[in-house]
Length: 137
Length: 143
Image (cartoon, rainbow over all chains, first blue to last red; front, top):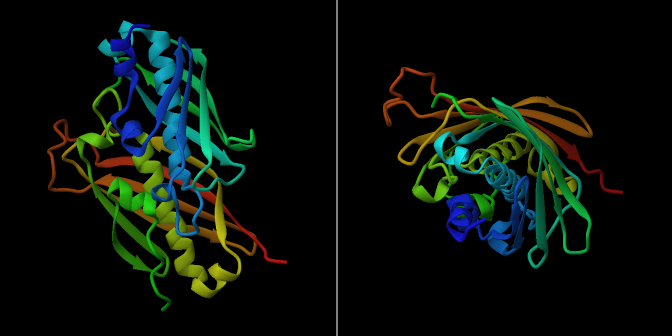
């Protein structure tokens, strides 16, 4: 995986919120983020949108690494996702998100993601479906 | 009518703006910029899931009332979303939320994100519906 390809896997939005890419290989990606006050909801805990963003990014990158050049010519797009929020996190916590491709078909791909706190506790889990190539829009 | 809840720092960070807040209905908007995109140049799904969560947490608060919320906060436990159409920098999106059901321990809300009419032409005359989501909240009982 070249550095140029790594850069292509990065989401401007992920970078904007402060996510770092830790590991990337075909079908797998791990991202991390250290929570700050700007990542919270009015109750002072991590906003759910932080992990949903990271899980979507982890899977998009894992899928991109697996598809290779094909991903550049015919980009995949998230079409469905579901997530469960199992625990909370606060500023100072380091969140690690792993994404794994479950299946890559000709027109659809599936993946799952997990978000954990620094102490190993599961914060969220999710499953995603992607349209692969040939989608309009 | 109870007062409007404060906005999440995370929603302020990404650029979401409250447009309307009343009992049973909340609407937020966002103008998409390049920093909202994924590697393919279209809006990152996380922008929408963040705003849906915000809108639905807010609409449930609008019906429960601030006192009930402070006594027993609600928290998102489950969500699902369908992404129907791509959005791009320059688009302005509105995200609306409604309560489907409010019980003593569980609440359910539904959100829709649309491209605001009058912005970038949709080209092939497609519907301006960008995404739909449904969220489940648990109302945490204080002992």
